Image 1 (cartoon, rainbow, N blue to C red):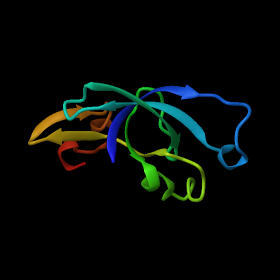
Image 2 (cartoon, rainbow, N blue to C red):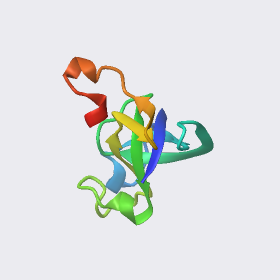
Image 3 (cartoon, rainbow, N blue to C red):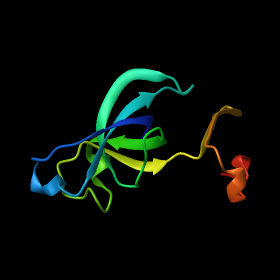
Length: 108
């Protein structure tokens, strides 16, 4: 899986019937410091991610292993919305509002 940021949406009125129900998002791949790598993918959104959300996404055959993407011509899929992440004990990202939900970011 890869870490990315939802930066846009793809709208297509004419498409293969197998992808009709899927929302397609533009995801910018991020590095371990949370900085853009300059690579973008169009990913099927299986979790309801929104613009600006940091997400985990898979590519290739792994992207076709969700309930929504199984058997569909998908090359990338958003699998999760990230609440927080750290690298070697250093917090890289924390989604706003974790404390308001009663969650401890260190335990998420």
